[in-house]
Length: 283
Image (cartoon, rainbow, N blue to C red):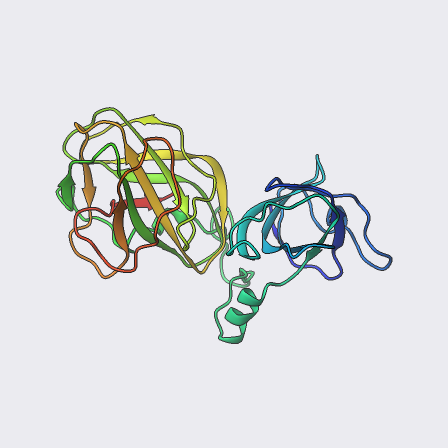
């Protein structure tokens, strides 16, 4: 898997709804299609525009060579309030692009693309970047007694910011359990607008007191950084305990009136609320 930046990538699609774009291999003369530019599981920024309707979307896509489809992995901007567009019937032009939001970071000197290492001694396994050092609130623990031992409600989603400074592949969330374990827990990630990004974990039996429990996401996620994401956590048993941040200057909150196992769009927190933001790390 690699991130692709290529010139003159274009195709069409008749896909409707919010599904992955089924590509037609109908690139204009002088252009290459996505199959020419990408290998299986490569990511590429795209722009999609309905030819006759005011429906458009810009985002990060993941290419599947077996099905010649482009999954809309992360929507950056769109005609649907920057969420995935439910495209109507008709032809859509799908282009490989460099989005304005990415160019703006380049102009201000904040680069999102990885830089190939050269010289020195190569680390074992190469120069891949792991998300294991990324923690909610950019804070981790120093001892097992850290954090507030919090009792969950089964009708609440617990929310905390996590800053991702570089592109990386996220496999799961390591949740810092509290003094008791009971029932099941489920986790997911949301973008900075509070929209879940389709990575919800299975309902997992809580395990291990005052310890990090590794909870795999339902699918690995190719995170693009620098960006702020949200970790969302739900419990189905009030006998459970989980450790939360006591103090901080980052976003931490909860959403009430929720149903266990169903993550809805949340209001991205801009202030800190004590004893609700889960202590967790990515991996």
